[in-house]
Length: 336
Length: 270
Image (cartoon, rainbow over all chains, first blue to last red; front, side, top):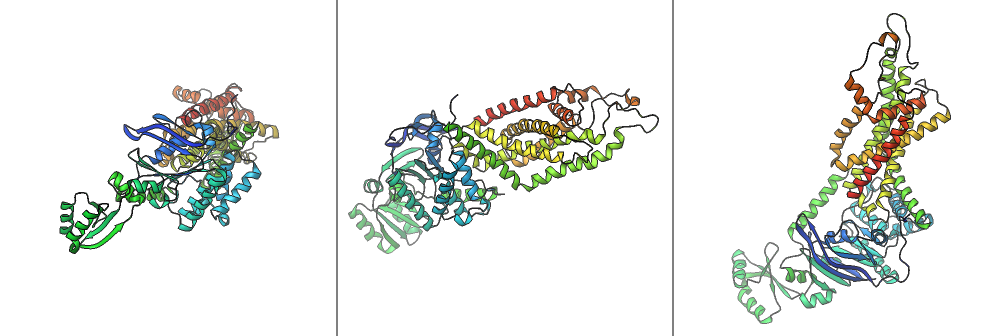
């Protein structure tokens, strides 16, 4: 008989936590991932940055064995995600984008369930459950039914649950939506500690720039393709550029600027962003339009501008906001 | 050894969750209590006098049971059917509200997840069937400890098969609303054609022996597997069988095996 739950591999753990080789995926003919290749070293924090629909969640679903790739291969903690699913799952902790808690159980019961399903012994279950509940400051709610929890509390409980079985690799899909700054900081600090002490690897997907500034490596993904990869500093110096943000006084001024500077990009409703790396051109522009601007501001390279210069788009366009709102509404409506 | 213990823990976890959820679902519990009361108190008591005896002339009984006694095992099966098939809602719930992913990324193999869920649902359904047993005295059914034990085993295996059937339905139904309508159109016809509320041979007295049911009805009753489940429980509880006594338990076990295998194929495909 084959044992249903193989044990973790013996010996030293592989230096590469996640390895992705020419991974492709398609939904009904539409390519979602296009030959993505990635190597994520153990103990690092890696952020996948890209707009909604870029393929981030599909990549995470494949890595967490929920979806089979249509081409290429991937492995987590040395286990192939198609052929060695059980082994791969054992090393993973996953926080999904939408809640996957049982809202008819209490916080403690949700953790207890998780511990049992991961085969943890009773004593270890109790200790770890108490520890992770303390981490996300939900001790006072341990016996409350999850249905009464706010969105932020659910999020915290979910992160606590993913850490319960001490995974080698943690997936966080849009993790801090709905978390206050204090909790976010606390959780990131804990994850940093785990990375140093236990070589935990953290893979985050997000479309919030603020979340990736502290990552070791940022990977910008758009339309299922990796368009840049590196530490935030490297990305900024390589792809980022200084931008000049201006607000023209009226529509006529805006049109005039766009006519003269075709490289200007619309910024929100009234603003424009112009590449400002060329000092002479910038001076010429400012001299010409000085009287027709209401606001002028220089923007040092940010990851936002890296994304802008790589894709020609803002990372968080309005469509994204709409979709977020829609999803939140769906969640509210789905709750009984 | 260690992996075996871990698998057992996982199985226990999935089972326990179903039990915990069921105890918090008041509506289901109320249904489980009120359904047998309505069937036995109103239908059973109301029809009891018409089941036997003759209004005119001499009374000669062919089967020595009252209608309440005859109906009693069928109401147990009805309660199990409702709870088991409604279990599909729990499966749809897991799928639609994302909880399923939490289990699917865990190291538990899928067949073990499904087994845990079905065992949990079957336990709850068996307990709902067991609620009816409390009314035994009232229905003039006297039960020995041994009879009760055998009945509970049969009820559990039946509940296991029907819960698996619920999972099969769940894989084919997309919405909760659709399922509500669907389950009633499945449960009630199966129940009524299982020789639950009337015996297959209408001749209760000598004067009625000339009467027979139309062939199509007899045919429906005979091909309905629930018929044999009801018959098995009648054999145990009131010592009355309309079919060879072994058929009932055999059909119950066959349903459990076949439905679980189909449910597993469905579950693996998701």
